[in-house]
Length: 460
Length: 72
Image (cartoon, rainbow over all chains, first blue to last red; front, side):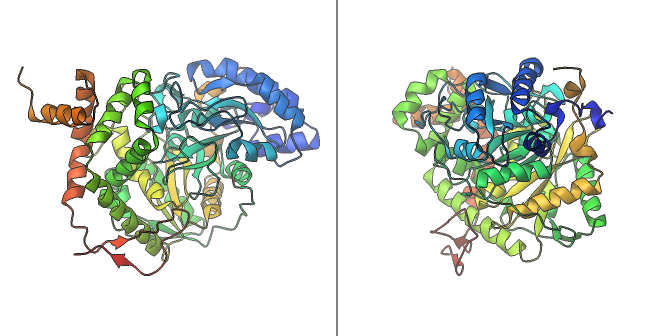
């Protein structure tokens, strides 16, 4: 039997996260064999991608030997390079993190461990989380499994690429300005930015951020729910999504690559045919969301890093990272006050919108993954940097703190994945998974089961 | 070579903050400002009077209480 896209269902790495967990629990799959298969597949398949930058054969074997009987017992998970592990200090995609987070037990580590999971590796990321492409990193650029010459996204690009390439069935990312959702869209996986504060921030390099939240990244909604439950430490109960109201926000469908817009509109049609009602919803304040997000992010970063540390670290930064760290010094304080006014405006606007729609929808990114060699994207309005385009689409979830998700919803003619963006009320991250699950059902699961060319090669 | 107004501003402003700058820095900053500068200027010029204030902002939950607006 061959799975859609040529994946091999007989190989434990091609099982979903829940299938791996279930097979281990029933004794059909030996957790030690799964761990070895995971390490082997990373070794062979990741050379083209550079998605997993550190692997832990000894530490993960030790975690497995001590793993409790939890919902993820024995399942290998990769984590972004932003979380302290007992044996490793996070580096933020750089030579070191600048906020002084040492090796230790981060909350993300503890919650994975308590669920029985095994941390098998650390994933690549955009330097200090300051980009949506993933091509700037002290570890080198991270390739996209659908086309390794293209960006995997950022800043959680390694986590997305590792899941899409079937190196791991689940990974943890973080999202301060769209950093889970953009890579999820670029790589064709499901990525959930949880409501701000749902996962404790200790041992997280950006714990100071009022914008950033960790979240699960998996192939489909059910796996994302399972890993998300481990991270938040409570069930994310499924509910029927058929009767929910989907709010179509016209302004965020403007200036989108026509092919991307068509794929996303088809996904909205599929949800409508599955029973959801679709209405148009306006959101106030959108015209300044992009700059408000960028200002808040960059100035929170600047404030969190001691000046001397920043100066000492300067020679280790990429030329772009170094220059941008200086550029922050030129931003007038009044701009931040104004950004916070926009933030309040958008938070009220989202709350108002939630009265007329249960979930709001637009494309996750306006254009598919750009080439690593040139990270600009072509939009109807012209050619712009991907970062500039992306933050317009994703920043609202970070300014508001609300949960948001990118669900795979199709492909361009060139075979690049497209993601559908969903956002909802602060209290209901589960609802996003319900809608993503409905979308999978309505489209025959063909988008979540498609495997990239790299995963179709006969490998370990 | 005569330094343009933008370069002079960047060099002077960074020097006042005790930050050194080279030509690569300036080139990147110039691009970044060309991309984000217009949006920042639009934000600075925007009439935000009447927008709600949220001094007790908690990103984990929606805004609470009655809307208080920025002074006109």
